[in-house]
Length: 227
Image (tube, rainbow, N blue to C red; front, side, top):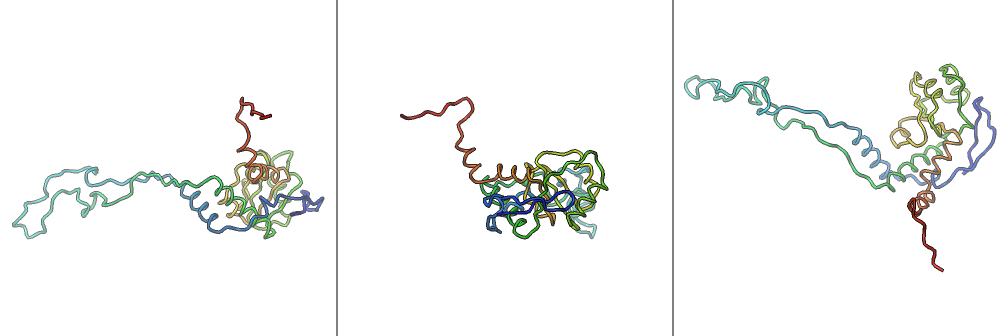
């Protein structure tokens, strides 16, 4: 697949070929949904805690005698039926983590990247380097590129000046290519990537690259050659 490459002035400077194994994958809704649910679940802290009747402070003395008062029989003031008493079946600290195979996670990421490229919401930049952090300069660049909605800006490596220039803009987020994830890509309308970031993504999540990494010999071990 060929895509245009834009300069910071919004002009097309060239066209490059991007890997269809990363940017041309058919959308798999089930895998993407599972990846989103997993990521959101893993972000939950699970630290909420409520006290049962055995944990709240208070006396366990019977409030009044069993018979002769005309009132319903009552025991401890720590009963869940009374104000200040314990909580019945309340939440306790727990882990919400969900597991997902690595190949499925990578497939979900390739699916959302392909969806952005297919819908025309992927903008490839020649480079994105700023001499100094300046919000006005970032606003000018986004306006030149025709970005009038939320956008995720991706660079190959963390760029301090880019991060500082965009962090005050509402609806704009920056991150390095190695931290790309399904939720962030789906949360922003436009996806802005530098050419170096595109190549980094192809290196990290391309099928052939993954197979080459899995078949590579361990460090310090020389593969044997059969004559």
